[in-house]
Length: 390
Ligand code: SAH
Image 1 (cartoon, helix red, strand yellow):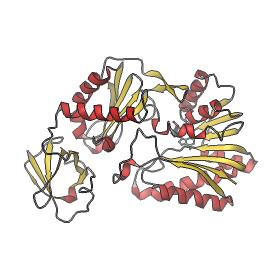
Image 2: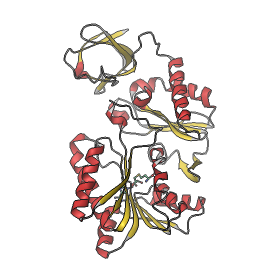
Image 3: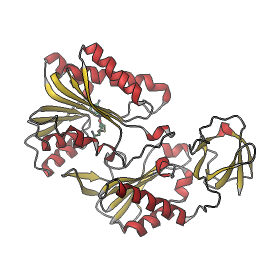
Image 4: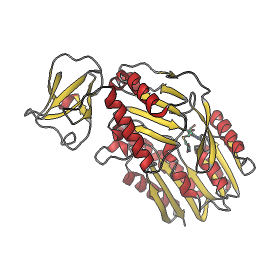
């Protein structure tokens, strides 16, 4: 087997359990690997570190799959890892829908699998995982006997690995517009054309957190996508709910979801740019009891963190001006590049500019089916904050 020997002076990150090995951490390679090959990694003084897959085209040269030298990397390995991940999700209370595999957090770097009741959506985001895709699909068939499996590999990061972007069926074809249940509501999931894997499961626990504050409230939700937060607000007793998204397609999906739950009289949607609307409606003096913001990641690269922070500050500052004294702001950030403390500092800065005092109701992360592994920073990515705006 090909050997990868690490430099002497590297950060303790890998020793502390992080599965990524960057090229500049490697002293030498013994052998001539092909992309996706399984290699053994050793410390500079010859101690076994772990086994994983290699790709010389990627900045992350090796992603470790195991620290146990005796463990074989074969189909059984993937079957067992998926079974363990499923057992864990069930243990913490998920049954119908969940992120079944959350990459590094499930010891399967660069693999994402979402379970939407009887359907599975998969992303293999590295060369090494792509190699095992068929084995993974066979394992899923054995464990779940699903009605369908679909690949949503239409993501640009695949190109950094030398992989093409693609999507399509990995099982017999099926109708890709399905319905899931969440917190007592129903939602369409568009597996084929929806954003990411079709639906944002990562907010599924957080959506319950708005239950009490929206009762009898006039609610404005920005960045609504499938309308999930807004439809929850209507279900939990809001007086009126308006959801906005820049995409006409999102507004159509959200409207369809409101109808599916017979909440279309309370909950409506409009295609608008949230940045413009928040500015204009602030000037117009509009006021809401609850304002919800769930924007997309404003940056994907470390160099542009400041741009992202100024985006968060702007929408939250403008948003606070639309909130009645004593009303609530529900605000999220989904990029791991903005750390929780940084996010809170930004909201605090916005409050100071808006001359409002904040009383924290709750501060949470993503749903627990996307586990946070301590020491693996990118697994802690979603910030979800509710504050009363005094
Ligand atoms: N709240 C949703 C997820 C939102 S994803 C949920 O719980 O599932 C972010 C959404 O913001 C996308 O649908 C995108 O179309 C929308 N968006 C991006 N820029 C926008 C803008 N400037 N104004 C309004 N919506 C925007």
